[in-house]
Structures are given as C-alpha cells and as structure tokens.
Amino acid sequence: MNNTTDQKKLPLFPTLDRGGRIELVQHFEKSACWNIDFIVMMGLSTALAALGLMQDSTPVIIGAMLVAPLMSPLIGAGFALVQGNVNLFKDSIKAMLFGVAGGLLISLVLGFLTPQYEPTLEIMARGNVNLVDLGVAVLSGMAAAYSMGRPDLFATVAGVAIAAALVPPLAVVGMAAAAGVFWLAGAAAVLLITNLIAIVLGAAIIFRLLGVHGSLAGSQRPLWARRMFLSLVLVVGMMVFPLGDRALKQARVGQARPSTYPASLKLRNAVKERVATEKNVKVLTVARLGVEPDTGIHILLVSPMEISENLPSELDDIVDNIVGEDIAVRVISVKGIIKDHPVVVK
Image (cartoon, rainbow, N blue to C red; front, top):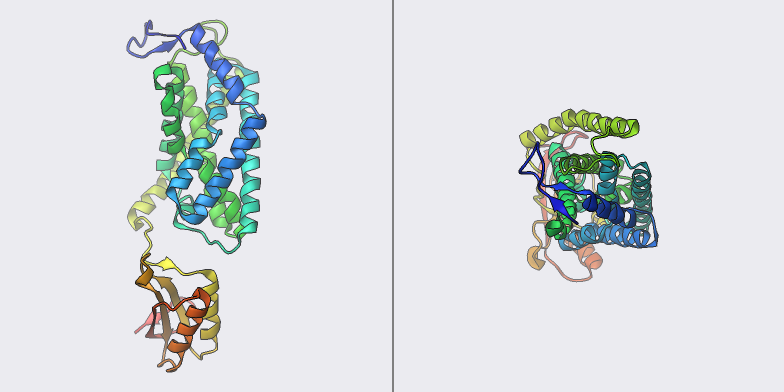
C-alpha cells in the first residue's frame, strides 16, 4: 500500500493516497465477505475457543483468537463507513452477523454435548464486563485499522485480535445458555456486542484520520454513513455510564479470585445425597484447596450438633469410589445454626 505524509492539517499523521485506499478496498472485499473460508475458520475458531474455555486453558483460547476471522469484517465495516461504500458495508455486516450466528450455533451444540463441564474461571471472566472492556475494544479497532493502513505494521493485526477477544465471549454465550446459566450468557452477550460496536467505531475514527474519503475528495459522506456513525457514537455513549458504574462496583468489591478449586459435579452431588440423609447437617463446600495431586478433597459441613462418627469415613469411601483412587479426604464439621439465608456459624 502506498502512503504519503503530505497532509496540511495533521502533518505528523500519515495518510493514505488513492492507491492505498484501493488496495484496502480490494483487501476487505476478499477478507470481509461470507465465503467457505470464512465459514470454516469461524467454525474452527469457535470450537477451539469453547474447548479451551472448558479446559480453562489460556494458550488454547489465545490460539482460537489468532485464527478467528471476525476482525476483518469489523474493520471493513469501519472503512466502508468512512468511505461511504454501502456495498462493502453491507457485505461486512453480513459476514459479521452470519459469523456470530454460526459461532453461537457451534457453541450451543458443544454446550449440549458436554453437560458435565461447569463454568471455569476463563468462562466466568467473560461475565465481568465493564468500562475497561469498552476501552479495550475501541483501542483494538483503532490499532487494527492503523496497522492495516500502514503496510510495515500489518503483522501486528494478529496481536490486536488477541486483545479484542471476540470469539471467547461468543463461545461463552452459547455454552452458558446450553448449561442454563442465563445471567452469564447475557453478560457475555453484552461483552460481545460491546466489542463489535466499539471496534467498528474505533476503526472508522482511525481511517478518517488516515485520510480515507469517498470517490470525490472533500465530498460529504452519504447520509446513511453519517447516520450510522452517529448511531454508533450514541450507542457507545449510552454504554459508558452502566459499564463505568460496574467498573466502580468491582473496584470497591474487589476482583473475583478463587479460594478453592471446585470438585466435579458428580462428586458434589454424591456427597450432598449422602449428607441429606443426616438430620440437621448441610454441605457448605466440596472442593480442593489447590491444584497439587496431594491436596485432596475438603468437605465442609455445618450442623447445630455433633455429626455421626461414621459420616466422615463414608464420605471418604464415596470420594474414593468416584475418583477411582485413594486420595486424601478431609471432613470438617462446623457447629452452626442452619437457616436458608444465611448460615450463622457459632
């Protein structure tokens, strides 16, 4: 792409000449359209992200973000918005919507096929959307647009794709909905929508600064483009207050960090079924205190009286049978008054 630094208003900011703009249009017409390549890569990246989220594996999630093709139509939409290219804008939005719909379908299927998996820390992190995520999305769109407009920086687009994190929240929406955790699905959907809108807006701002315009230099953009740009600004502006309030609340409460690591759902249900046969005994926690093999399982019970002497040994046998090996089981009984909300410990 050919660039020139001949700009009267912003002499230090590089601008795209006509040849550079033509190359960008050709690039987006190929990469920001709905075709078999887009379908295959979108499906693979979503499935990879879903599996990485279920495994709580950050490297796998990063790999999914690297191969996801969703960034191209978003940046293409921002470019088309500034240039007033209605055909490119429609193709980009079509690819984005179909890509999101296809990814949602794949994540739903994987969620129904793996009901034994519970939300991991990586999955839960996608439910903590706040103002910081909005800022990251806007800056990601800006960085991606600038790198595409500067051929020497084009290789940095992959890093921008990691920062934007489009596919993981998309995968969380489907998996959380399949698991019936609808609040998490809704929060991840808000994060996804925030990223999509903010990236398009950020890209449009940078392409405008790079000197992108319509076919006639200095001509006013079409009415639809101006209205769409204003709509994106208004939507992002409306998001600032609720996301900012959420960020302040998280700052006051503190970030979520696990004090324990959950045992399997099958193991927890088995322990609860056995404890349910005891009078006035409730299960507070069935978890591991670390990831080391010798950490074992910790079972915390609450009861207003002493628990039966044989209960700890029976719970130990239940854990060993389910796990398939002899591991350390620590049963801790706390004397307390059992209420629905809360449990008052003495």
